Length: 257
Image (cartoon, rainbow, N blue to C red; front, top):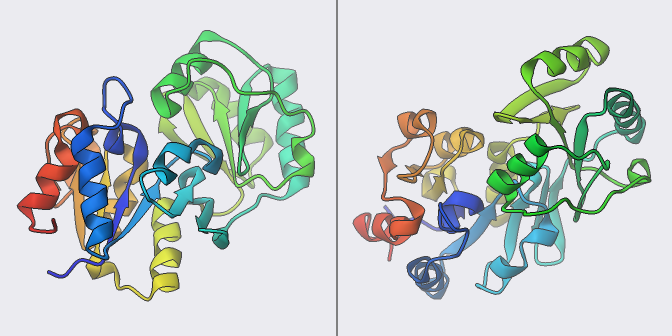
């Protein structure tokens, strides 16, 4: 198969699953893909502001905020901003309940609530060791993804208060708060349309359950060896862990590089 585009999740896929570094083999694999004219897209839960090291690798297209905001160079391919009134309503409710919220614009900020579960989740999902800045005027900006930090019991209060919103868990302590569908697969379809590439010509790599739809959509879906069991179940191939040259191993196996 003549693959033309590779979508790479970032944390736990491009980055080492244990220490967050980017393995040399992955850097070289990305360089080889680009030199062969194969497009490389980072498809991440990160906001765009946390993708600088990926830009330095030569990647120029970013699906960020779990699919809520897509940019190629300086051109916005796709964005799903939330209604600012709804953002404000959720912020006010979270304030009364003392729950953490994170806001994905081109940058990343939170509502100022701090507790151990939040910091653990930030470390596990975005490799952050400390809280980002607090944004008290977030309702004045375009928010492409809103996340709630909560257990299932707490989420019940939100679903009752906001029946028009969807709360989709993607981490044991983090949920996407959605006004309309935001997903990596929807963003990938917009990206493929932008480049004029068929989904059968796409490869997708991931490690988390928020990558399931992405792997199902791509012509070749590859799960990292360190990935979730649910993801591995839908993958076409399970490669080695990200920290054990998993990306390079799979690309060589399928003769892409």
